[in-house]
Structure formats: C-alpha cells, structure tokens
Length: 483
Image (tube, rainbow, N blue to C red):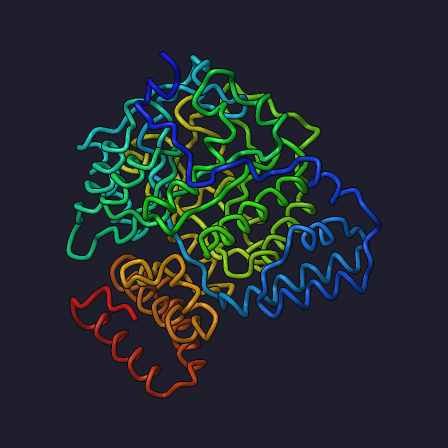
C-alpha cells in the first residue's frame, strides 16, 4: 500500500499545479553582483509605499552586508509595521491534538522512528478539558496542530474543530477562531474541514531547497513528496479556504534561500488567486527528542532580525507570526521589526494546558513535546509585557466572521484599515480580557493603555462608539462587540 492509498487521498494537484521553486535561479540571485546602496534604498521606499517586493528585489536586501544599510532595512521594517499594523499584536495559543505520525523527518521529535516519544491523541473529553483551560486563561484564538497519520483524516480534524468551538467555560469563555496546522489534503479533504468553520490553514514547507527537502524527509513517506506539499495551498484555495498560512523551518538550509522560497510562494499565490498568504511563520529549529541539529545552518540572532525585517518589507500586508520557540528577549526585540502575531501561555505537551501550572512555569518533557519552547510565560505575563511596551494586545476575530478574508481583505487593508477596524477591535477585546481574566495589576495597566489609545482616535464618531462599547463591556455582560 502506498502513502496515498494509506490516507485515501485523491492525488490530483491543483489546476495547473507545478513546481514553481527554481533552486538554481534563487541561488544565482543570492550570489550575483554586489549590493548597490542606492538600489537598496529604492527598494525600501517601494515597500514603505505598501507595495510587495519581487523575488529579485528581496534578494537585493538579503545580499546587503553594509552595517549602516542593514540598519536602514531594520528601520524601514519598523516603520512599515507601524503603518500597516499599528502597535497591535494579535495573540493565540497552539493546541496539539495528536502526536501520531507516519513521517520520519530528521528535525522532528514526533518522527516515527523516535521510540522515546510518548504518542497521544486527545479524545473528545480531553480536548474539551484543554479548550476549557485555555478559555479560563482568556484565549479566544487557537491553532490546532495534528501529526500526519490516517487517524487524523479530514473528518477527524473537522470534528475536532467543531468540538473546540462548542466548548464554553463560565459566562464569557469561548473560542472564536480556530486555525489548523496539519498535513496537506486533497480537494475533498480541504472542503470537509472548511465546512467546520476553520480560519487559516497553515502548512509548513519546512525547506524550499529540493535536495535538503529530500535529505531530511524519509523516503516513501507522505511528506517526501515535495510537489504534493508545495501544491497544498493551491488545493486549499481551490477548495474555498481563502486564508492560508505559509511557513519554513529555519536551520535546515541557508536562511536567505528559505526567505526567497517563502516570497516566491507568496507571489505565486498572489498571481494565481489574486490573494497572497494570510500569514507567514519563520521558526528557528530548536532542540527536540531524538534530533541532532546541523550547526552549519543555524541562524544567528543578528541574521534572524534581518530575516524578519526583510520579510516584513517583502510582503507588507501578510501577517508575520513569531512563535514561543524563541526566548523572551528575542520576541521582545523582533516585535518591532514586523511581527504582528505571537502565541502566549504556550504548552506543547498533549493535555498539558489542563494539567499544568497556571503561571506557565511547567517543566518541559521533550518525550511528550515536538520541540523545546523558549518562552514559557503565562498568557497574562505576555500581556503585561506587551502593555508595558505600549503594544496593544488583541484577540480580534472580526474579519473572519464578517467575510473580510482572502481577496476581500485587501479591499479593506489598504485604505485606513487599522484606524477603522483593527484598533477599535483590539481595544474591545483587550477590555474583555481585563474585565474577565486579568489580575488587578494587569487590569490597571491595561486600562491606562486603552485610555492612551482612545486619545489617538481622530474620528469623533468612531471614538464615541468605541467608548460606548468599552463601557458596555465593563458594566454589563455584553461581549464580542466587534466592528
């Protein structure tokens, strides 16, 4: 029985599906003529005008090694992030559903050959307990994570999504947005999961470099098929999932190559479907059970900052996700250079949210978890840090529920989207957190931040409506008052 038969997938690719990653071309762009300072500044200016960069223009930024010009790249990303996203940071939590996997990826603690891994799949009762614990902490947005295994077929994923939405803890606990990180499906599978009401479907290509991809993924496994995985986002789009998330795992190959792979993928989707990815993730490879890290491709903190900045400039309207793989000081630093989403209170052990310490200090057990986590703070500790830095925490889910997704998102994103929608929705969801979940210290600091942000709203009518909704949340049971 081959892999496709095992998972009962229709092997049909998307319409016109083909491998659009040209390794030779990408490599040539990274090692062509020296960077011209004038050209770098022209490219930064193009991005600051909120125009996406080409692969060639992105490569120019990556080739730059002049410390002064690299600083200009960082400053450009900082400026662009404020223009497009303001000071808003969206928060979510990952929830691992199952660690069974048919693949044998060298870098993953859940690989099938790792006999030290404790294999678990959450049943309905365990899933409900996890969701309740997350709701009790204040979460409204989750991403469900699944291994690749026949047990985790489209129906199982759809049922898990519906179970998650159905859980309500206390008077105000509810999950309003469920994203999915899972293996690529065929068209029928994507349609099945879409029917459960998911938000974004996230697929990591892991590495865009063909030879590396073949080396780190076991032969004759589902994941060894480079094109099937690369084409996954196309099939999702054709199946009605218009919010998709790309990702690469940095530390498997040259980080600059992977950046160009991500940008190539984003532009491919934009060209073919008139909408690029909703998010891009760029985690660095971390220690895991049974995993040896190749030091040749480890990304330094300095290069990681440049990586984030270049991605921000290359794809102005794509959300950038910085995960809890990174330590606190790196997360605090890189938020400024383009990050728009982070996870908080993250625990990777299956069942660990409902069994662990509320302060997030639970010790990791890598035999139960996919990789090492660098930021183990609780959600409230993350909230306090953001508020102290005058970043605006947001649990907003309005766009997905009002149809402002996919191609329609761009219609709203360009003309003052932040002022009209994102900031007001961030303020109302922050108010919910402060009233329903926050301890007194966080509540006091958060209310001061809300007052400061309200003062910046220039539209008197909008400001009055935001104030009215904030007061309703504070004094009544009214919730979910989104714009």
